Length: 487
Ligand code: ZN
Image (cartoon, rainbow, N blue to C red; front, side, top):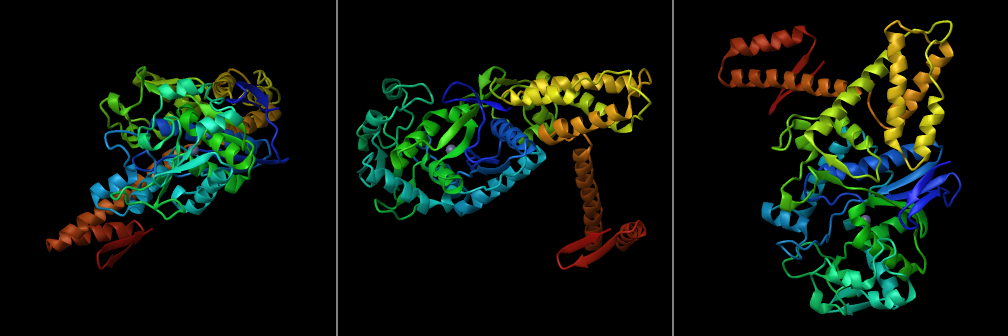
């Protein structure tokens, strides 16, 4: 039976869904004002592993992962300005163009990492009405106050009725000294009060009408509103990176208890962080490496490019609650390990069965399941696969034999655990799609050369390219602004 570590109870608990056979799971998604980096890859892969395993166990899973596209206030040099709005202003774009651009790029990166898309991907900007209604509920229960058009959570009042800080293990005194949101300090009763709704300043371009002011919702509000909208007032799992535990998730608990009189989430799960050469990722360290930079090998900290599968494998080689330290050496080791598994998988598909087995395949299936049931222990699953790779190589090298039953079992377990659950593409699917891109790029390049030749009235070269491609079976059509081709 699956056990998962619940951050709230600080222990592993047997997972029992609220509704038999169904699981509702919510994960905090990206803020789309820049390219995804290694820090985005970890929660995406961690909760993809959970999603895949729950489906393997036979659950019908509704997986909600949001897109944060409004009012994400973090105090930095441009205190108070929404980062998406800022980017739009600087690049003279409509804010939703910025959102769409980075959302598309995020999706592409996730697809390359073989992260399955969630069942629902709601945008904060598309759920303003639900967020206003949620704020109103908190107002009606008397746990919020209006100040200068903004609405704040009355944390002191809330903390008299409910334990505030229990997820992150903080008390109000700790929170006073580390309050993050400097914005609006003079409007609040206490520094630890957080915004549920913010009145927009005149230069703020993303704003909506509300009973309190023309403004935008506080950052924590979207997850409370969208989580309960799609999964119900109570749901099973809420996940995210450990850095979101406070204030974000703590605030979500307070919002739910204040508005609904109960907690919405039964199991809180948090993945640990990625450090780079022992340091936190952060602007001040200038060590944000985007996923695109990893795939292309273009960053001063990178010695070479690393494929999306290597990044995925690297992250799964550590348990999700351990820290992962990025280094070139660690990634090179992951690359080698993945190559060994890929080779073993491809050999497993080639080897032939004999009358009986001289190699021991053990109870691989049970051992893999036991590891996954133990709070998604992916490194242990990987070590079992490596053990099994040794048996495969022995048979492949002709130093042992395997029976038909054992071979079928081994193939089934590798398919389930390596490919379906860990999500490793060991069958060369990724190489094939990379090859497809290269092939399309090469044809486009030839046709662009032909276009240039035509412009220069170099009919000899133009015809030569066209005839050669036609002979190879391509159909080329000249269009108004270039060409179209098919095979
Ligand atoms: Zn969230």
